[in-house]
Each structure stands twice: as C-alpha cells, then as structure tokens.
Image (cartoon, rainbow, N blue to C red):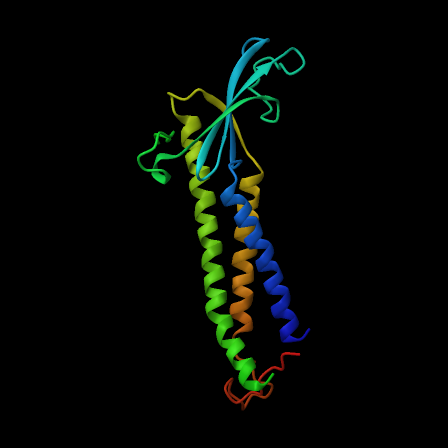
Length: 200
C-alpha cells in the first residue's frame, strides 16, 4: 500500500472519530439513572445526562412496564421531560449541579503529518479523560447515601466517546508513524540517506 493511500485511510478513520466525539459532546445520553419502583400505577423520576446538562423524565409505570423491585424506565417510555444545564457552564443562571507533487510538496505534507498526529493522539487522550471522569462521577453518585438513584447504565453518547478515544488516538499514532523518515534499505545507509517514499 502506498504512503498516500495509508494517509487517506488514517484521515478517514480520524473523520469517523471526530464525528463520534462531536456526537458524544453535544448529546446528553452518557448515563441513565433510575430509582427503584415499588408500586405499579405510579410516576417515577428517571434521568439521563451528558457533559452539559441533566434531563429528568417523569415516567408513568403501568402494569405492562412494572417489574417487581425493578427500576424506573426504560428511559424511552413517554413522559414529561425537564432539562437543566450544569452551573459551571451557565454562570448566573439557574441550573442543576451534582454535589460530588513534487518532492517539495511531499515534504511539506510530511511536515504537517507530525503535528497533526500529535494533535489527534492528544485529542484521543482527552476523550479518554472525559470518559473516565464521567464513569467515576456516576459511580460516586450511585454509591452516595443521599441519592435516590439505585440503577444506572451507560448509553449511546458514552459509547460514541469511547469509540472516539480509540479512533482518534490510534489514527494520531498512525499519522506520527507515517511522518517518520523511510527506513534505510541497506545497512550502510542512514534514515536521512534513504530515498523518500513516493506518495502515489
């Protein structure tokens, strides 16, 4: 496979990773929280949240949805929903917050690959940090004695963030590898003496 083809594949994977990260950041389905439901024919309060806001949903649990000792939901059931943004993103507003073609052209392109690779690998690490902070926050909330939430699961926004971490980090590393000089074909050559790989 030619170097240019490898770069195109890496850029395509990067684009998918960026799309996954964008979807994760702008949506609020990272985690879904649910209280215990002890009686049928009553309304319960479930919640889902992301990086920016918390949405509470009041769901009526009828006989067809009731499970003895189960939680409120699923969150896809119809109900009144109320969303509020976290205070640290909306200062001064009411919001919820959790307590806890040439050779020259080819050289220029190669020169840009290295900073681009470092940038996207770092973006992947930032996505990983976001995922881990969210995971620890949910765990701490559930283990709190003051919480009403007893059940939780991670939703599709969280899966997008995890996919973005893998795709961005690996593609960033791939661009870094592709930006390195070609390995010498003969043992008496150095990397600088080796002929540059053609980008066809």
